Length: 74
Image (cartoon, rainbow, N blue to C red; front, side):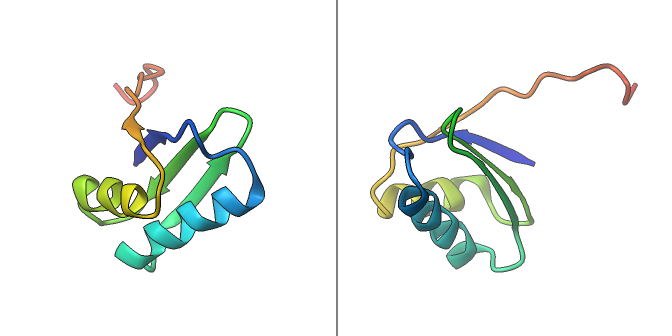
C-alpha cells in the first residue's frame, strides 16, 4: 500500500482529481482519501513513482508517508 501526503488536497473536487489521476495509472487501484489529514492511500499494483508523477501532473504536490508497523504482522 502506498500512502501519500497531498497538502493542497482540501476539498471534494481536489479529492476527485487526485483519485482520477491515480486511476489513470492503475484503473483497478483502491483509493482511500482522508481530506482531514490530506492523505491518500493507494492499494494497487502500480509503480509508486508513476502514481506520484500522475498526481503531480494533476497539479498536486505529494510526498510518501512512512508506514509504521503495529507489530501484529511479525
